Image (cartoon, rainbow, N blue to C red; front, side, top):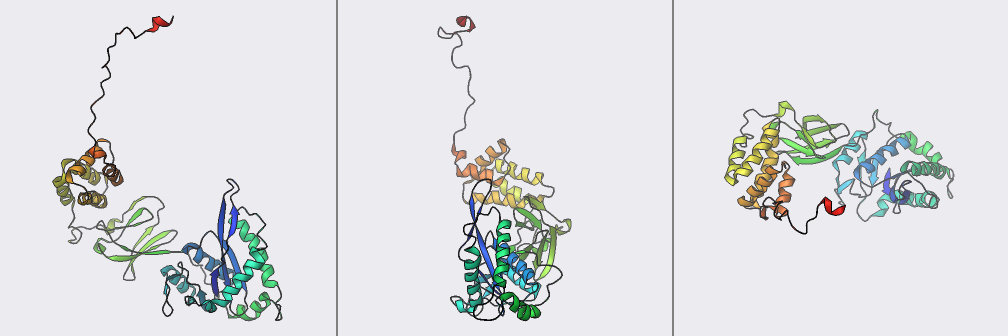
Length: 370
């Protein structure tokens, strides 16, 4: 299966605002029959790229032995003539469907000539026909593409007998591998280093891992429903995925007396804070007390104390004093005070409301307006 994106995009109009958004056109072509699949997506990002593959396999009713994609960043992390490096999620999709991936060599369009020809056909017989039609959603655009795609695949060849559909049924379809029971679900795979609070952050939410992995490089797999963490190809943590800022801590991941983790303790953090200033100590104490487990506050406390590298102790102490007075408990609040130099402003004295005389010849009361 040869894969590429069309160069031109298709406009989609928002019915409520009139805003025009460009849709990308994904094209996949089978090698023997030239049987073609096309669909519109909002982007060429990894989730859309892999999702188009899955829908392409479902359209063909099976999988091929090999995929030949272009060197798109979503699929190929590092393009190389001899040994291209695939994106981990793309590798996972290939493993799920038991397919080999052979990216086209850079600057070698003949490696994916089928895709190049398929893109031209889609541009001429589908996109050109739709250029004067206004669509108001991606689903509507794909419905139009699907109808014209059927027409394209049934169109007779000019110099050969039959059509793409007929050749597909006689050549490619019998050779396809049946689809697995479950379709591939997109999984975002990232490398991360475990913080001293034995948590990893993904999409603004913190997830715990066993405390003995503090400082280690791990691999995080984020699916629609689960967050999984792997260390040396062994799964060490699983969490239900949360779509809001916060922290999820598994009690079994918390340390008891582990030497590697106990280099940081609430006492050590408070001693460091006290050495900077009393207001810093108050702020740090507040963070440690607000969490169910003090370890959960280590990250934000260290973030505050590390500001001492960029700002003097006097400034940091004054900034924490302002934050304590105004109940500002987020690290970004203290940073904003320092960045705006608010801590350098003189303290304002209370405004005296009775400085002017209350009895004066120019002051008139209600009697003056009868």
